[in-house]
Length: 218
Image 1 (cartoon, rainbow, N blue to C red):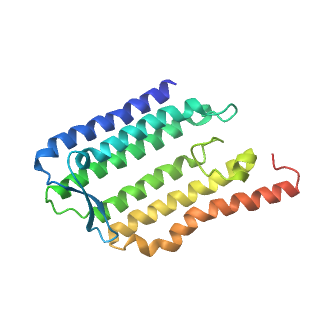
Image 2 (spheres, helix red, strand yellow):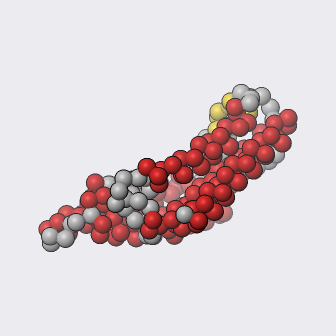
Image 3 (tube, rainbow, N blue to C red):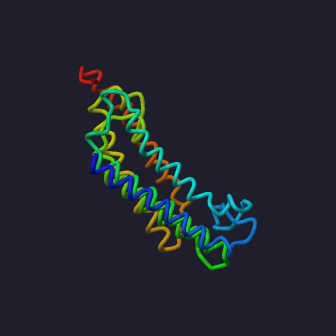
C-alpha cells in the first residue's frame, strides 16, 4: 500500500498543478475558451468560463479519485496486489498526459502558435508505450486491461493475451510518436491502430478455444 500511496500522491499533485496552471491562465484566456480540436488541429469546440478553464483539472481530479476507489471495490480473487507498481505507473502516465493537455490547451487559448495535434499525438503515443510496457504485469481484475469473457475466464488466457497486448500497445505508441515527429498524420496509421486494438481481443478468443479443446482453459 505504501507504493500505491506514493502514486496517488503524485496523481493528486498533477491535479493541483493543473488547477494552479488554470488559475494563472484564467485572466489571459478568452471567453469562451477552446476545449476541442478536430483531426487537423483546428479548434472546433468552445466552452464558457469558468468551467471551460478548469474542465481538464476537474477531469484529472475525477480520474484520480476513481483510480483510488476502483481497487477497493474489486471482488475477491480479483484484487490488484500483484500489480500495484504497474497500476501506479499507468496512473501517473495518464495524469501526466492530462496535465500536458491542460497546459497546451491554455497556450492555444492565449494565442500561442502551438501544433496541438502533433503534440497530443506524441503524448498519446508515449502513454501507449508506458501502458504497453506494464500491460504484461497486470493480473486479472475488473477495471484495467483486455477484459473479454475469455481473459476473465482463464488466468492463462489473461496472461498470454496481455503479453501480446503489451507489445501491440508499445509498438503502436512508438508508431504514433514517430509519425508525429516526421509529420505523418496519425489517421494514416488507421490499419495499425485497428490491429493494435483488435488483435489482442481476437487472440483471447482463439487462445481460449484452443486451451478449452486441450482441457486447460481454467
